[in-house]
Length: 528
Image (cartoon, rainbow, N blue to C red; front, side):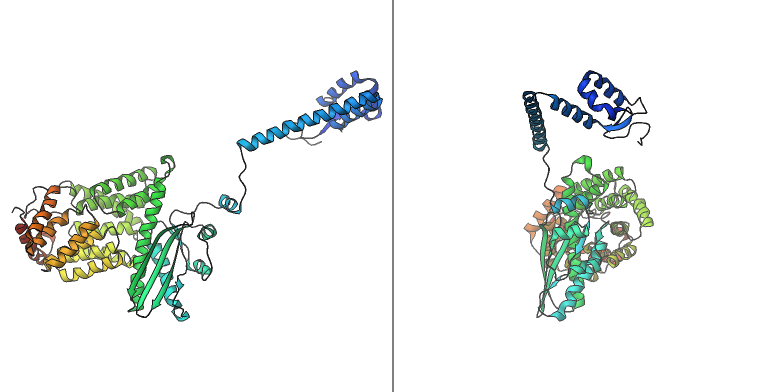
């Protein structure tokens, strides 16, 4: 019999003497006292000449021999004993089985649990854009719905850093089919599904879209976009830009909220980066910048070369300078950010967050033409990024081209009418309108900026100037009080002379136009 590693192989066969079969019956019945040692010797395996037999056969032969030689009354007793023994054994086994089932119940193996056990978790930023439905009833309009879907697939792949967007060919296999989001998530291993519809009705276009969590099957975001028909290609670009930006913000926000619910011991660098990006996406304040930087730095402790975390840290330093949160240390902040961004863009010259931060850094340095070129590169890579349009507008304003700047601020609002960062372009637009003498419009835009971000203290001073120039003296003083509470001691000459940009590096035409702002500050009551 074969063995493994010198030990006896698992078997129900044991060796015995060569003559055992010839005298087994007589040995069992006539000499039971001698049979036991012989059987023990055979089990020891020390007699190589023994043949292998089944141990249960020996026991059965012994039992049958004794049974046949026993008196009838003894035979009945033996039967009862065997029956009772089997009953006890069965009861014990049943009790053990019941105990096991109580403490370790088996979960029913449904199709869903079987599939989920076999499929690896979907990437955190993974999405499929399902073909948008054409609700116009005209098959000739199908191209427009398909165009929306195609462009969204492309733009989302740019708008979400580190994402996974299912390719068009795969996504369009679901055209016209009744779909279940959870099944799609399992089929494609994606976390989100975007679905929607397009209705071209006369001169109006209506787009409905909703974002679904494929794990839970519930809608996490939905919106409707109505726009005049006009030039269909231009309208398509506008709709796609708005959708991609809104969806990008929602996916990052939802993923970050999910990460926050995970125990700290299970959080990885990607989770921390998502939470940092979600903090950056909120209306900016000194607190949100500190929170975001802390999350990015924690991510870097886990993964020191994570470019998204590095770009996030650099961005917080630049935003703190441009938003005027600190009266000192701003040059040091820019010096910390500059080499980090240079390193990232050397590794990946299309990294969107780094490109955005670089455009802002160039503006803070007074390099406005370079800042415009950097922001336009962001637009080329992701046309739906309103932040980049705002950057172009601000740099153009500092170059003295205030009328042109308004157009860029309006483009930012077109793509981000509900964006948490819209206060930045509304504030820029408000200042530009004031420089152009359009004070009533300036007040509307500045009020909207402050409503969008209550932490936007800087625009209270510009609002005070606009109120004063339009003759609303009480409102002007009230707005200036709000500003003074956050920035006490500011004078007309020191107001924004170093940040958000060095005033001496702006175009002379801008500095000339800015005299009107200074006049409004004086009328509002700001000391000279």
